[in-house]
Length: 520
Ligand code: GLC
Image (cartoon, rainbow, N blue to C red; front, top):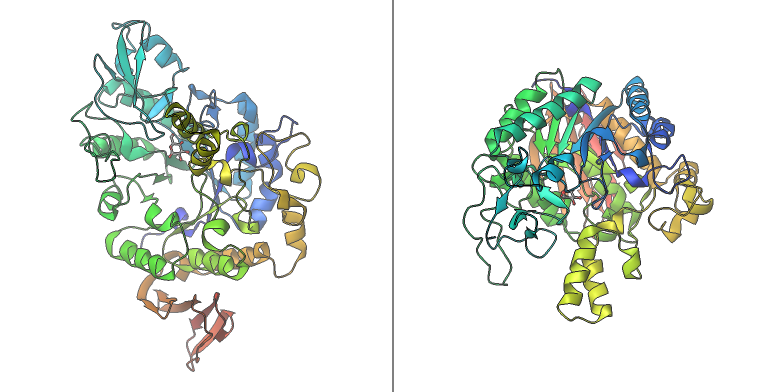
């Protein structure tokens, strides 16, 4: 088993606008982040994933980049970023950046040039057609926007202000290689590649079919033939630098599709949303996904139950059930794979709900609201639809303490703070011995100190009566983990050579136990 830093790392996703504001503008920034590095280090985190922080009009909070070589002024200056990186590295915390190369903002210089005329040198950086096909945007509505200056349509898989790059154009590939080298040279430790199986490498092919529910099946617009080749080039470029890591966001619910993008020439790991974004709790489903990752993913899987694109873990999987939340944390930190914790998860932060359209800042939520209004829905119904698609739910400001605005900012934040911040915050959690936060710390410390959890194979992965159990083994050392999600207590008898690492032998419902085999 090859030793690599990322197999030993617990990652922490920071949603850029929502972590810590230092300059009183209601948005988080690099100075704020730097001031929280001690907290991150103390939690045992060895890698942070920062959502996009490059210059952007922020139609989609930075997933719409307008300049790949500049820091967005909301988050500070290039020097602020460099200080953050240096301070993170000083604490042995690696930094991976979210890189969006499927599309750019329409405000980017490339697009501004491209739209000027059909023979502009940047025209083919994007995808233009006289007649659009039926492809739909992932945010809703058509994926084509008419541009009256040149009488052609441009293609956008997401918002109309996010135009898709033409990966069939070698110049685009070279540009992106330049971007990768620039940030790697500055010292970033790797990338989270946004919607990376969505790259348009083969241009516009056939119309997409429609399923029985009348919804479009994204058959031809994603996973195009050239995607793997593009990934290989990205990998090769990243490999010009030592020890860097790539995690890919692969939009697909098919494990066969996910697994083909993992490998030494491709991506180190990919997110599996079949596991990560299960909509409601089911021990059996979690087990099934663990099993499917074990039999399908030659390399390492990833383990997570939250991100900026889905409702929070607590609301989906452990509402009013702190013990289950803790057990899910324990599972993510001991099962085989690379754990990713979404900021705030460690204290049990919950979803926020929008009460009016003004409160829905998320572009996907807004698009669905507007489409509903266009269809003639009443405002209440449009708001319900908008809220259903609103990803802001899990993006509220980090709850640091019980002062106004949760210690996140001194002014009204860009998005509302969850009202439970007065009792649910980092400061109060640190003081309660048995808080979720303190248990996360314990579990992360355990994972960091046991190579079995970082490198161990499964010798057993089992499910019975709503309990999941597995044994992991590495270099002759064995740890067995039990997660009791049934309604009854589970009694475990220790063998002579076993000792309890964490938990109790009578595993109460929603509790866990870890047992280590020791040599006599
Ligand atoms: C990814 C991001 C999401 C963004 C989309 C378009 O799915 O996680 O937040 O809206 O890509 O860039």
